[in-house]
Image 1 (spheres, one colour):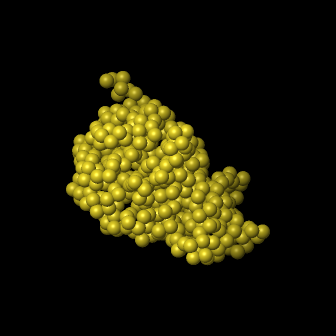
Image 2 (cartoon, rainbow, N blue to C red):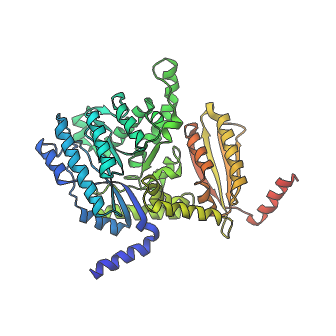
Amino acid sequence: MKRLLLIWLMVNCLTGNAQRVVDVHCHNILPSYIEALAKHDALLDEGFPLPEWDAGAHLAFMDSAGIGCSVLTMPAPQPYFGDSRECHATMRRYNECCAKLKAAYPDRFRFCASLPLPDVEAAIAEAAYALDTLGADGIKLATNSCGQYLGDPALDPLMEALDRWNAVIILHPHKPAPVNRQLMAAVPLAAYEYLAETTRALVNMLAHNVLARYPNVKVVVPHGGSFLPLALPRIKAVVPALQAKGMMGGIDFEANLSRLYYDLAGASSAAAIRGLLAITSPDHILYGSDYPYQPADVLENNLRHLEKELAEDKTLSGYKEMFLWQNAARLFSLPSAEEGLATSTMAGKACTDSGHMLVRISEIEIHPEYREEYMQMASNVGATSVSEEPGVIAIYPMAQQRDSCQVRILEIYADEEAYKHHIQTAHFKAYKQGTLHMVKSLDLVDMTPMNPSGMPEIFLKMRDGK
């Protein structure tokens, strides 16, 4: 026992704030769920065996990795085998077990309830029971339930109900319908098809403007956004051509994308995060482990590697606590959310204290049809930031003369704390979310000032018109 306590203390000394990490992508595999699948010979329905799970082992992993709270969800497959009542009973047992786990470990476990889809009426009833009676923290939805994909108009009554609850929805890929058995046997679903399946469901939701029509729901996309960061530019390019031929309606990209959050399960690297920042804002990126689908020591090493990369990356280091716990705490209204907000507020007040300037050039390519609108929004947010935030020294957008869709924004902050405060402001968030659909590519390039002591004189001359 003393040895375990010593290890725990060493881990927490080494990882600093890691004890507050919030894991939004992990699964609990309960005996009743296993029994429901075994009854229908469906234990290998997703092409690979389900891992073992118990609360004690999960808590031990969390303690070792420095994870303070985990949001539990049911894994794949969806336990529906043609009998809606049977499926509903399975989901009810699962959700009630999750509620007991949350009650037993209120600071460690939260859960998103599972629903007996494709029966929409039963799903609405179970959502009501889970959210209003059991105290579920959100809803888990499969990308498809027996071929009924998210975005299907048949699901609108469910989405309308979840919108009234202001529900957080965690998506998880399931076996596609239909599925190519030969491909599934050659390459496990989790290696490739899960990413495609998630993207397939998201694109269907976009095409039907689901999140624009139900703006009170918030959706967590798994696995680093899956293929969405790659697919979005192509979708934006293809949709106008289809609309011109009357084959598609309009898509409100801004409204839809603003409701999406992204977990880092299976994509815990600085490179993956940079890709996500081209389609979302820093406050919409969350940590996820995917426990217990990989060994605990592998997942712990992945988290340590991510923390190291974030700490060493000048561009991303200011986001570290946001990614690892603050964003999730706010999304799920965890007790630490207020602490995080207070920290950000204090950072804003102290942003002009001693420290090193943060100088960055944002290299952005804009879709041509949005060039003027984007430049106006970038100029407005720059002026507001410099005027209202003491730690923002300059935000200066420019367009290349040879290609006006190539935008460069010079950003200068008093120090890293000033930057962290800036990205939490309402005007920055409105700008970031409002321009996501306008941006084709984004790269954040940190710079080293060659003559920082001469900067005050330069800016004074600009102010005085000399």
